Image (cartoon, rainbow, N blue to C red; front, side):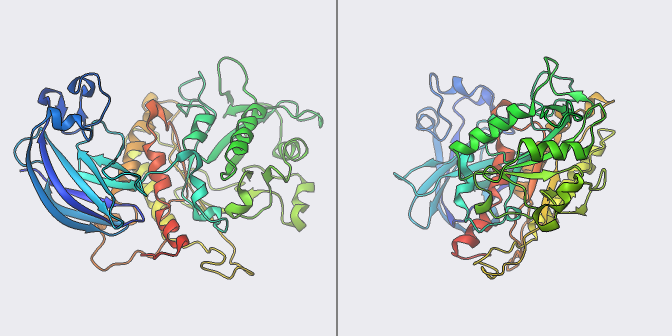
Length: 485
């Protein structure tokens, strides 16, 4: 007996399941219930369409169709009585959804692969587009509103503080080059990360000639190692990538976390002076020591310092200091409030068994972030004397053990990233209850803060980033003033 499908509406729009159809897979030998199709292109020769395309009806025979009326409010989860299969494990289940405005969309499960699928619109010029992630292990379908990841911040009001947003980030962001496996943390370049929604970048630098006040050279490093085996990579070149992106996408911002690492005798104070004298300017950077609103940050680089300040910089901004303060949180911490941030950075996964412990720490921190209600001037607080925003929730998904190959960054990410994606789809804002109790009202914004990842984008898989951005739906609904659960 197959299990019923569970559907979660993580969009800001009500959706109603209107039709349930069932088909036999066109070629059962290529069908895998836990992963869709092993050779999907051979099913529909010379076509790249998904099972939701017209080819399904040509190549597969529908044997049942049922009209239903299952309404799903925004942010609600429904354990339906719709069985994933009725006659055989090779069936395709097609669901048709309708919006309150009359638009219709459909999706087939299991999907052709483990990555997300865009629902097929059945009405012309739909006002909304939706993306589904299907989790075969639990027969769970999560629905998100489709977002243009290159400019996703344009949907939010200028008054939104950055701490209100769910922001995808990367750890040791520029470490995408040929390097030691224990050094490399990313699959793709920072520019590709930017184009696919990443807005927080964790960067480590080493001053080349710190004793020379005229020299601005900063090498990119990871610990004591260079990030490339083919020669040093420079911070200035990385900075140009950020600036070029912001010029063509002025609605966005880049949060840049900088830390001094590497060999040599340079000091944090020297690094802070180099940055102040050679890099930052008020037109392109946010260096005020307070969390900005999105309107203040658009088109700029928001500098978060993980370094100590030279004495002269401590007097900046009327003696309040310089840049967002993330100077010295507790090492290997599951939860630490420090400066402008609240951080989960449990990083010493010494054995593979500790990966589960790391996953739990990440999920616990998601729930801390979700319970916050960020003050938005003019929306939830006085626009003339607004309540200060903060803190920024930082949730590091990264961890490693230099001495154990099974605990190098790519290996840990291969286990952790899918687990976090599944948690965000199924359980975020819900916790151990599994499904919100009838009548229970979630009180927070439901965000996840800044989520700092390893190895996103590998093989074109951006679903973790898409899930993180999708967690902004409650905030969007609140900002638009159309109701808030």
